[in-house]
Length: 105
Image (cartoon, rainbow, N blue to C red; front, top):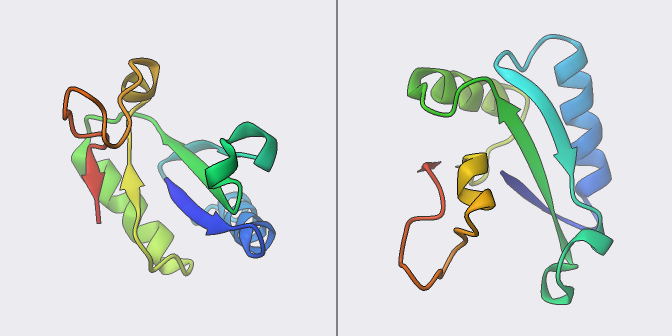
């Protein structure tokens, strides 16, 4: 997961698309970006960009994907969250105190 401000999300999305189509993001299967209509009002100032990999349990692939993202300019915090965590409503500060991501670096 990559979070970007409203002002920078378009440029970030463009960079990701160009890198994906140029074959520089090996491991990424698909991507999506949340519009401001998709998020609660308190988060409307930032956008979530989701990148999907082939296998969330393959930590070597996750690390390679992170390296590819770093190589195209994403130096900030990168968080990996599996779809099952979202499907089960496991978010930060959940009542079960279950970690909401697999990897954050």
